[in-house]
Length: 627
Image: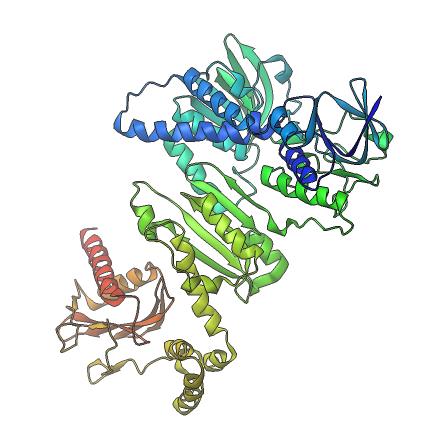
């Protein structure tokens, strides 16, 4: 007897489950076939157990700060992980599928014809077939590896307890996540990665910060190291590695192979259905249809991204294309992922390197340190950085975030990117304070101002950058701009160089803008002390120049015998402030002035800059005198 369905799906992982529920939602008869229980890699050996382990390890890590001698029973940890797996499985069991109108067959399916399957003696025919056969751990042909009891993500969570020491082969997301988590449980971890660095698909600077965090926590990491042999040495496993032409050995009680995934394409009789494939994937078109009409493929077996959320997106699209007369294309511009280390590392869209390759130097890069977020500073030892890549108009091309809640913040960025919203529009969106996502508003404000500076009326003024435009024309254009947008006028003024310099043995007189400070100001509110030479004038000049060159956001524009002039760009709004130094030989002191070009600057930044510069100048001077 042959059972007939509208849709037959082979593989009950993330992609297959999504496809099945989508098909049933369209009132189609659906059968879901898998040799294992529903849930696939994500439920049983991937996302769910690994994130549960990470959460437990994070709690233990923080507890150890206050209870250093805390003993961990890893057998109990593994029992808790299995409890969570069962809780998730309860929402996708055969009984739940049946209630949703989906038949589940626990068996191995093979093609016997273009639209007919054999499931261990039972025949299934379907109008449309969807392949979601998934992937398996990739195990390289390392000498002796098949003779040692190595682990993969499919077997590590089935152990009774974790070994005391562990070698992890592979510095991708799986290897890095498990390295940190196991180390926090008290397992001594050594990680071996063939490439020059870990997490090679992520921004290098952020990946290196993760590398350092793991090392600081006690993980030993060998990069540019290739595994060439494995052998059993008593109760332990020895892994031989080559690094810089030299061979060394790493010995641990356990060996975890985490070198990525390979597509499950063998054993299904795909040839009988006319489905073309290779060792890496089943071949599909932009609509996720294979070379056999009416047969689709989704998830890890297709790629190009072996991620559960991408599998879900493919499952929905392929099922709709199988059912509806209008076909949609799969769009991979919306790719995003997160590596769940502590802190997390999130990625959306293009990296800076990829963006430059595609769009050239017209892209705009915005960065913000977690150290400048009040919420991050409430947590001791917090590290992180946000990097957003925009096109020349301010629309998101890609982003990378390292820091707490990066997975949640990158989701906001993904939403903004997918809805094609200009990043500058976030400048007016109110976020709760203090939060990590507040960083998007801070960057949004910078983008908003830069967008204004790119307006034609503002560009006219910027043709005479740093005040070279004649004053008469400034007044003329200023009047026109004032009739339009006042904030653009503020940006124009910000790019006008005031009449600075020295006159009659002192800094030229000029109106002090709010928050400005000067050692020559008669106003006590804006007065600051001048700096003593600390030795000869020549040495004082060297100390001053050295201090300015090491000061973030400061660019020296003039360096004369008695006068030094620099531009300081503020962190938050990117305003330009003028900083001046006059060497008063008679008094043997350095006069100081820092003034904002616009009506205001970032609150109190001029006085704070004075204090920071004074401390650094005195520190350098003291060091020189004592050396």
